[in-house]
Image (cartoon, rainbow, N blue to C red; front, side):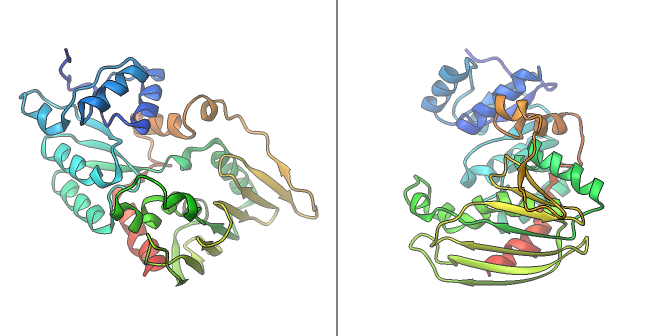
Length: 319
């Protein structure tokens, strides 16, 4: 019923919604790929939604057939399974991996994954697709034209009244800042520069997140841009990033859209961007796969850099 993987193909692990989004992009780019799922039910649903068959019962079951795995893979499984799937692929000869964010359930898994990857000379990138939004690429162009970011601020407020109702494992909710809020935190420091110093404060707790509910902080990035952040998971709010140059104020709120305020003006105007790919596919995914396929690393986050952010940013915000 299922074809065997050829080494020149790409392996997609996962059959959930994110994997389905990846399959659309892989097909659009004419990239030959094969899919491994976990449950029979999940693989059947994947085939119903995409028209593509998937091998069931996980990577281990496929490996037991004795057939080779390809040299590159996209791992799009649940957060709690990212580490185990990635390590299994490394142990069985896969050399390039694009792993869904945040690369592991917690910092320790990211560290262990990096150590294993380095021992086996495996290249791993963490799939923060918002780095590839058309709005973000246009913001980068304006920032470069203006001479760089002088300061920035961001908000990673979560809607706790909705999060607490999600069908997520307890350990995922307990690590929600890393598992979910890191989407916007990573993007902010990607645009403004990673911190060379940061001061962080937190207060409160939630039933499902004991390690803080209100977060505030500030610092200086490696590009000498001052920054600040806040997030109040007990109050209304939404994700957003504002970046300031000598000429403009750039607003990404929502992150898929870009607004601009020019020096000397009170008007805030929406920037018209060419975002057809972000409307046709899950935003950012097309260009992210394109970058991974063509070894273009400018926007991709390698696992080593991600671990540095874990230690220098996420750990400091949450500790």
